[in-house]
Amino acid sequence: MIDVETAYEICLSMPESEEYDHFGKPAFRVKGKTFLTMNLDENWCTLKFTPEQQSEFCENAAIFPVPNKWGKSGWTHADLAIINKTEFIAITKVAWRNVLSKKMREKYE
Image (cartoon, rainbow, N blue to C red; front, side):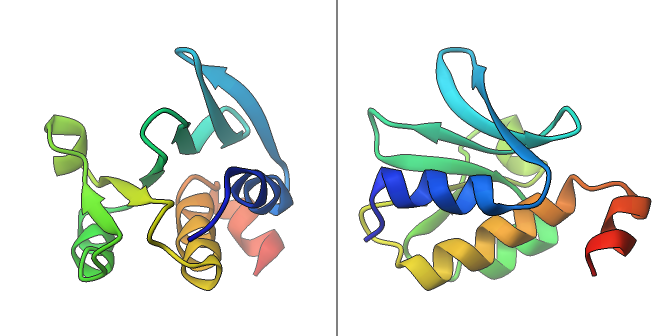
């Protein structure tokens, strides 16, 4: 389990990330590209994965595809009540990296 405050800290620890309001929900982006949104009412977050990454990560019971067209393009939920901190850091880094430009990826690798 990971609490919301820790999830926020992890998201904001990603280089050049910022929090913003996404249709009434807290979200995190880099240079205008969203990598994670929070659904505080449901205690989950939604992350930007590729469909291939989604298949890999969804082997974990805490991680599941968004059940609509967004899910088919890789958007994926993570249940904060189940996922542990180490797993959350790992998936957040992947989602963060997915929205970086090539130049930014090179800068942070």
